[in-house]
Length: 288
Image (cartoon, rainbow, N blue to C red):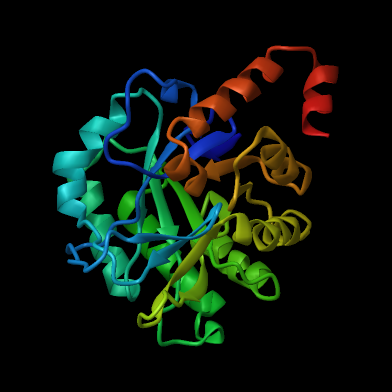
């Protein structure tokens, strides 16, 4: 899969929201790419550890979790992730266009030559309604990051899990200079602990997969979209990888599965690598 002008993935299986410390002996060097946890320009303190298990294979990513800043990423975390020898893309978010421009400018200055590109995590604020997030905003955010990083950087735009609107948002990303799309990020949800106050956050894992598959299908079958699509949401098995590829994805990201089972992403990448070294007939059979 060609993710950017100068970036070709060796494997379609990628790690998303990567833990800052990855073991050296689990095979992460086989991955297509490592996408970092989403960072913002200035660190945000949080009152929780950030993840709550709401079902066997589903997590709530709490809105008040601690979020690292871009400076800490570059100084402390990036060297550890680069040790595995695969491309690293930094996932970034911001509350508005100036914020995206600022963090992209910082990364262009402080991490040039260390990262293969960025992932723009597109989301609306907790208090907003979904339709407040427009294709124009996506286009302008993408343009702002592209202008700071230059023409050669891989630029993946991760979109919300809204099948009815994802095509229009994707067109905005394409017009803004994205090199790939990712579908999708977390779904707004709420958890009610026994006797506790409601906890707001984003749902990931098993519960998200059917929605994410539909988003991938919508993007991959839109004749106006030419960008490759990365599928993400509830990937735990080789069959789940195949499901995304059958829906039109060119690659996948694993996040919740890795959190629940460290090393899962590397194992899935190894399974793909084994199939890829077989005949074309066997590779086609692996996908189908």
